[in-house]
Amino acid sequence: MTMQIAVVGSGIAGVTCAEEIRKLDRQLLVTLITRETHGYYSRPLLSHGFSRADIESKIVLKSFAALAANDIAVESGAEVLRLDRSAKALHFCKGGTEQSLNYSQLVLATGSDALLPAPFRSQSGLFHVLNSLDDLVVLRRLRERILAQSPRPRWAVIGGGLIGCEVSADLAKTGDEVVLFHALPRLMERQLAEEDSATLLGLLRGAFGIEVLLNQAVQGFSGVEMDLSVCLSSQTAPGFHGIIVACGFKPRIELAQATGLETRRGIVVNEFLATSDPAVYAIGDSAELPGGRLYAYVTPVRSQGLWLAKHLAGQEANPWKVPAFKPKAKVPGFEAAHPYLF
Ligand SMILES: Cc1cc2nc3c(=O)[nH]c(=O)nc-3n(C[C@H](O)[C@H](O)[C@H](O)COP(=O)(O)OP(=O)(O)OC[C@H]3O[C@@H](n4cnc5c(N)ncnc54)[C@H](O)[C@@H]3O)c2cc1C
Image (tube, rainbow, N blue to C red; front, side):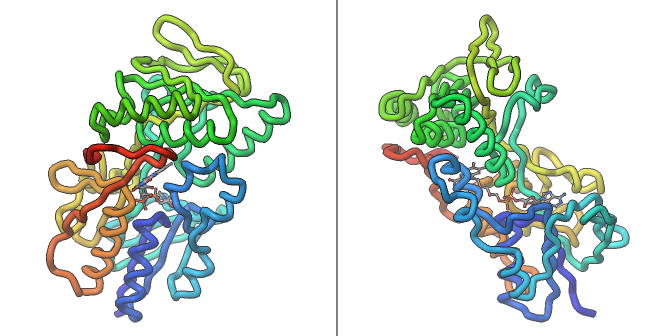
């Protein structure tokens, strides 16, 4: 019987794995199932989503039609609802109709959502996140509406990690006013040495004209769209047209959890990227490797996709090894003097 490999997710993990399987073995059936409709796009480029006018088309690296032409069956606009591991089937909803697909091997490449601190979760109508192309499209439309009323949009960005710093710089580059609130005493404290955090702070405040507020415990938000306030412990910062929350990432583990696979912060896998069910693998932002390690950067994620394709094609018997990788904060003019910590 022909092996059917089902891959859930069309980010860099899922697409890399599906394309590589197709390259290595033309006999295996490969189906990619994704809720996305735009095609396969570059998530890192989302950080330049405001300063580049052509971003909505240029960010798409490959259309789903191109993947289908390469003999990968694509179910786009399809939400995977649940897994039935005893029947080796997954159930998805597409165009309002529920369908199912049987698999021999299943690859969960479900990626990550933006992490929302608990106090923000009930206030989703008051802020935005920048985690997907859909999010960017919504934010760009909001910016157009703001510009129709006010010559200079004013944004609050919550979180001085990699994404918060990049998005703040990009908005400032377009001429918008940005206030960046960070909970801790220095920027990107998990990735940068102290001296480099200080350099980044100087650059954002100086060259980009961003008001960076450190040690700010944001409690929540109030107001209405285009007239929003950021609530701090002892005061309120008013006058924002829009608020973007960039407080980290949350692996999408719900499908795995609901079907009884072992999960912790991510979907738990061994060094062969297999979950607690040997017919189900997990790769990318959603996978948690031994030692509780998550590798939410494109180089290791792509490497997992390539490695797993080889493994599934019967051409790799050694465990996956983390490649050397050096992601950088994409803030124009910023170079760290010390290596990043990961
Ligand atoms: C703004 C931003 C900037 C970044 N910049 C960098 C950078 O400069 N360098 C770097 O190395 N990394 C960067 N990253 C991180 C990097 O983009 C991620 O590590 C990488 O994209 C993860 O890929 P993935 O395929 O695991 O997940 P994702 O890209 O999240 O893809 C997951 C896919 O699964 C689909 N999916 C999930 N659940 C379901 C379901 N139930 N049914 C159907 N489909 C489903 C989603 O729709 C999506 O298509 C950045 C991330 C962001 C958000």
